[in-house]
Length: 197
Image 1 (tube, rainbow, N blue to C red):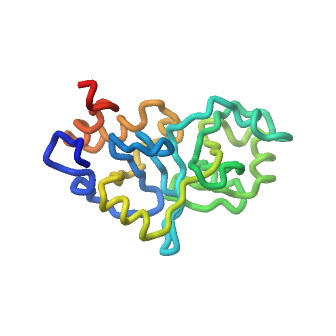
Image 2: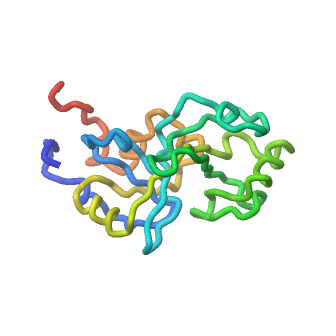
């Protein structure tokens, strides 16, 4: 990360290993428009690859704008990533009532039976603050993600202490970094274009 004015790199700040439920925080000058200043929740991390969802890229549409025959629920849709962006995915905190949910950690789940989800929303057993919807997902081969982390693209953070509502914050990238400590907080204050400073 040659634009970093300090004598440390994102990879040097990483103290956590990759696993489900961890957050990937992009380095401040990442050029890839898919992942610029993004925070990704790792939903799955296995030897054959990883799946995650970008938490802080709202699409400015509601789930009812995107899905037909879906119960009315005031829930925004986010861009989860560039893979399968013709499909809808969801994470939630209601794994105890949505059949076939896949645990991310003790409080978060992804996927689940679609008809079960619809019926629980219709019965008002699931509310907007308990679910997030995504178009597409982010995916990596195992070695690909390890390589990107080693090359300072991502900082790994814990998701504990963040609710689904926190994930929907437009300042999530800064908030996650600031929560990690003073060096990370300095990174959170970097301008998007260092030439403007």
